[in-house]
Image (cartoon, rainbow, N blue to C red; front, side, top):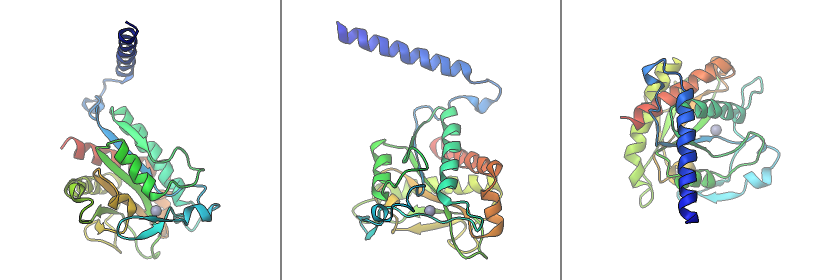
Length: 253
Ligand SMILES: [Zn+2]
């Protein structure tokens, strides 16, 4: 009965790993339990560190249903040269740590900050394949220097494609917006959207997602005040904690 032996060994190893993981979690706070156990969350850190050096690969046009767009883009940066791809990668790693502590399974759309792409189509496919309960794309804006604040982008209806995710994505977006404002103290965007929300049908990551999905534009990197916040590791931890709280509220709501 080799099959039975294998299953038994696997189950035993899993139980042992679970017991070990549980034992290592300090029981100091009521929220320390695995409140996200069984949940799958896809985190999509926008852009990638190798994109700028590979224009041919990232400028390749891909189909996002409502049009054609480059596979990926380089993103923006602060006036001091802190790039968006590094910011999104750092926040994504911090967020992954917080979510895994709470028992979630986390899937990232890229493994590091030195690669190229993947294309927006592939990023959406990763969340779909993982059957993610929620998908969050992390970005920072590069708008006029006078504007500041954050906003959350919700999927607009693309008939015949994303009907199923429009409503849950709105709930996800509201939960993240509220948690982000409470947790970071940042105001809603002063230059875009309404009450920190925007709705778009020109983003592949939203058009092609079959799972509840939103984008978060964490601030305006070209604004001096926002840039100072986003360049601070301590503030990025607050951002990650706020996103984790929003996800938790959505997934347990
Ligand atoms: Zn971006």
